[in-house]
Image (cartoon, rainbow, N blue to C red):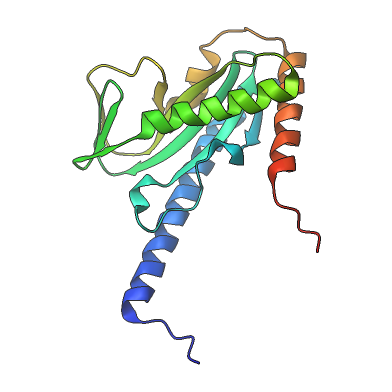
Length: 194
């Protein structure tokens, strides 16, 4: 049995690795910006959003990173989409990159809905979660009417968007919600025990 890849498989694997690295860098840039928020903010890697950090080979453009940002302004389900050098056109809930319409806004809303359901069940009260779509890259972001159900920003302005929400919850409540989110995220990961 040979483990040697065919040329087509090799190209696919190289492309997938490149997309994965770009996505990791985009997520890391967004995380880096959130380091400026201060100790009252908590970032939770949230696999329950249904979005994956790894790309889907059938549609590598749709790969995204996601996490929860919990702080004085509330709970935000942040979805990071890598636009690279591409121009992004946003008209209401429609996002178009390189002529392709992508369901980013709907996916960000679904991710926030999942987080809302999971946190509300665990906390015993309704925990509103605001969807945020952050584009990472250096391409142009053109808007002709922003979505009304999702906040849209760039990774460079993500920290400013989150702090613009003011102070709606106290730091103790934010810390408890972050603890609940971490416990919930840990409980949903598959056990490595054999």
